[in-house]
Image (cartoon, rainbow, N blue to C red):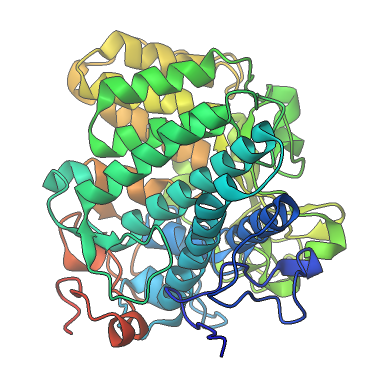
Length: 469
């Protein structure tokens, strides 16, 4: 009798696909006795794994919005649709739906990647095609684990990786799986990306919508920075910078976020027209009107972005004139669909900012400022060149530049926590917003999410401090 497995650790290897793009069995499942028996099955499974990343609960909306409303860039309007309140207030409980769905969806991507990784070597077919499939799956697994450990564990830099991370599942097992330490999770992520980069050696900068050697290298740079290995972060970021990508020019900036596949992008999750339209639940509609319009831009962020900074164009007013509050215009729409956006998960601007932050940590201030100026030359009218910055202030300038560059893209909260800095909401206790903490301590138990109770019910693991058991 065939067994069918349900849940995040017991998901069948082929995942339910978005938009009908993957339909291997009528119920879109493989039972646990099935393997990927040929290369077409491997490719179909890989497509389904990319689809898991695109879900509303993950990069389709929730992951970026949960992290943005946790920081100091935005606030939740007093009149709202009852979405993302627990993230803004950092008042999660172990049954929080957004937290649970993110956990499940990230592990769904991991389990899909595992099935490709563990099956592809044994199927017949062209070795290069097999290498690419495995390299892509390793990249996806690394990305998902990187996101999970960010959300559910304290930063590596703050604990030297000693605290509990997340369970590492590298193959299908019915056995319960304890939480690995943060250090162990990072070791696995780095191993996956190192192998991925080798397997994808023939996949270059033209690959925007699938993993490439440079996507693996860029994610390695991000992970090394989070780990505190600054020199390795510089090495990987430099590898990407020298590969031939180019920063969006000032004239291209206005259409940058509505145009997937630009020369700045390293890895983007491409959404295609009406086939992948999430309607009111796409990422833009949580900001826009018509739409939910719940998330508004903090006046503090607006005032931080200089008047000659072209990125200020992404902060605007609601088109229906319903309020004088400001909104995010980065995700206004794509392919004629309001609010649709193809998330640019890795792009060249981040590599310059990674190098700048790593140099700041290494007390190489001139190198840090030089990297900021390269980016600022393409973002600020007149170049906005920085000079004469005191060494003690360089890191703050790096973080400020990252805030301006990646506003609404899910970076700011992790930038602060990674550097042991509290989230300070300078726009707070206004009648325009719901009541929430003005400061979130970097060391507070609420800075990270609880392990979902549904996970603990089936896999009794340690709960994060402050959330009970």
